[in-house]
Image 1 (cartoon, rainbow, N blue to C red):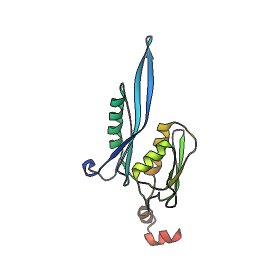
Image 2 (image 1 turned 45 degrees about the horizontal axis):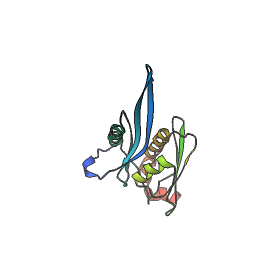
Image 3 (image 1 turned 180 degrees about the vertical axis):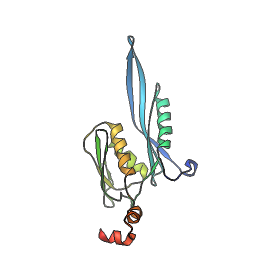
Image 4 (image 1 turned 135 degrees about the vertical axis):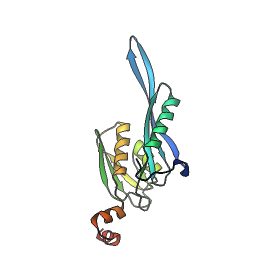
Length: 170
């Protein structure tokens, strides 16, 4: 997912489980339990990813989801410990609002969004889950929002103006 290839060995990544779910598959008079897990991996310095894995045991589901999270890493633009601008992102039925906050505010967020922002390295942010309670969809919407954030240098390059002029308009 990263535009420029990142050597995973060069970065010290932390891992955290967001949720584990036990599900049952019913067939021929019996129920077979299965587990799925949602996890986050990040270096707390602008690189973060989420993963989803399913297996017949909890340990297998966690192992699969951590491996999936390492495959889905993205780079997040962070300015002074917060997000560069406000964004509303949607994934399926989930809608998440991500807003920058002043220093010292902390991360005001739900369980999944908080974990993702912490592992991305964001220290101050205001968030609101607007429409869904499904943890996986909220996490995907958060990642989509972080992926769509624009850096100041990128916006200045797209508009073909100097960064100082763009910052002066704020």
